[in-house]
Image (cartoon, rainbow, N blue to C red; front, side, top):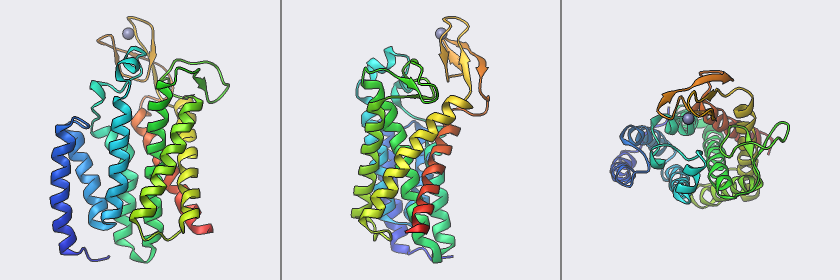
Length: 271
Ligand SMILES: [Zn+2]
């Protein structure tokens, strides 16, 4: 187990309290979501340090910005994040628990610290990519196709993919690479790290769509008949029509982040 530097502990506590207030006041996350984000942030800041928190913050702020762009249009499509785009604790843990776990392993097993920092970076590349793919895809007005079978589906439907979405995923992979390369003593080298974040971004997004189409729970609204991933619609509880009840969007996000972490570990091991 590595020692935590007391100066880092003090710095991290001050910065996290400040960020927590900012995230909550700007309504990026609700109060429980902010608490969850602080837990993930603390796990990363106390172990990996400043570089780790810079990567997390890039993901959080740019995702929040893209969630707000065209929010009314996304809402009209019935595909927007609920509650005005303010995300909650389940969303935070779905996206961030693999990063937090990688950070804790980084501390427990310092002999493989580089491996775990790459896993953390790549898990964030994957969920960042998936978030931008969804938010940018919804803005594109282009056709949405199911990843398996390429049928035209409703925007926001699990398993739906768009060309613009993959553009967004690529952008997220590049941004994760850029901030990581600037804020980490990078063990992979710049080119390999770009390969790792881009692969995590594109593969993570693809796995997310595959899992979304194949096993995520889908529900039908008894009132208007729309198929949705939500447990409530038109103010009424919805009925499960396909997929597994316990596989919701947050479970799918966790699988996406895990895909990124695995890509990172593989990249680290073979390069
Ligand atoms: Zn309805």
